[in-house]
Image (cartoon, rainbow, N blue to C red; front, side, top):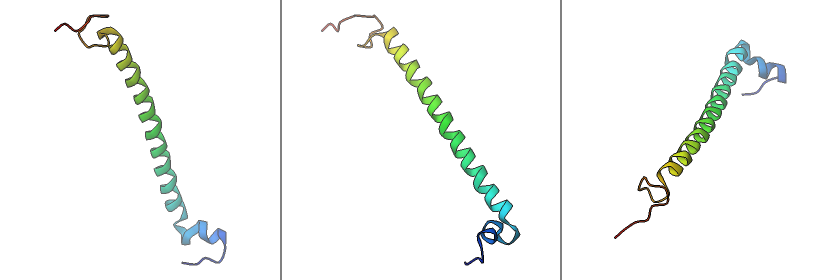
Amino acid sequence: MQWESWSAFWDMGGAGFYVWGSYGVTFAVIGLELVLVLQRRKETVKRLLRWRRAVGKDGSGRAGARMES
């Protein structure tokens, strides 16, 4: 497709508002999703580190406990 000018490109025969609005909403939702995923990851890492400190590194539930054979 060819347009006579940039304004014709942005207008897209009267459908420009719908087309560019759809792109805008899509990119906004993707950006929001990325922010929420990064926040959730940060919270999960903090929670796992707290759990690891509470349980102990060997997973026995006793801080500083050694594995006995």
